[in-house]
Length: 421
Ligand SMILES: *Cc1c(COP(=O)(O)O)cnc(C)c1O
Image (cartoon, rainbow, N blue to C red; front, side):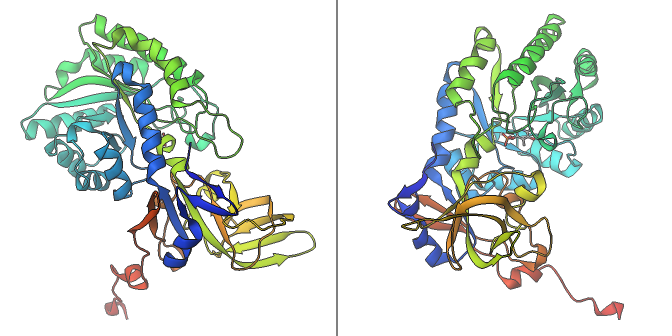
């Protein structure tokens, strides 16, 4: 359960009215409920307790330091995809033995830094990458644990941009090729091929594709183990879906009820790792924006708001649906259908299309729900718009965790090159 909702006419984050925050920080802004982040994390942790799973929050979904710190202090590990994320992970003092590093394109410097930082393991995406990590580990005179990312060739029913586990995708290594790699583990003396990893896609709302993929992977683990290469870690990735509109996603417990029986009997030999991003963060955050103009033409109405695609790109990028609600409900709401669009010079700059909502007027605040995952982290400075603040709430208190960028921030790495004149 997320902790956003109306109390009377006012929309609240936990026990804090959003109008109060808007007055202080201005609009637009991202708003996170720390209680919701922790609740989602702890539910998953509790559900997977029977196998004592390691939960590594996928920080590409939300890498705000305050959010990461709250999760890490409650025991979470982190799933990183770059040197920049490793830097953030270290800032919040996560135990490096709870860091897993995924990405199809890890650079030499990033690998070296991660090994020096003593991370738990790399999720390896190709044979070449295996060779590179082996070489760097050798140079650093250490043995590094790695997991091979398998492509189990299942196609979950989700947006095609966010499926990652079918043969069509750039991710992972086919089962046959991966088998050969395990048989030739001796070629990598500085690596321990300790695990297998899958991540079959995102926003997957039922357990079936996970079951299918995990069954294939367990067979793989057995076939490799039979040849004398016992696998210690099974990382089942992230991808658990959430409610944006009318989805009926599995709860953490329902997911665990279906998944756990698959490997409960191996729990002393096989350590389970999960990398949820959206499940923990998606419904833990919103974007608050203000209505600038109403434009009502005969054929179509538009509400022009101060939050644009540079702040939240998911509608433009994935055609994603986000629920939008007035921050203050009117006493007698009338309803209309409108496109809710931003100020950016692009037709793709919309937050919602043909959306029925209670009539609002200029100056009213809107809450765009489910923006805690792939929201701020995907924002940009397009149209020279400073990135918006990230505010966190805990109960009755709110704090600016990342302040609004200034105009000076926009140009701080630039100089006017006069030599070109
Ligand atoms: C993006 C990603 C995740 C998190 O995905 P969610 O759908 O947000 O849970 C986990 N693992 C890997 C390898 C990823 O690329």
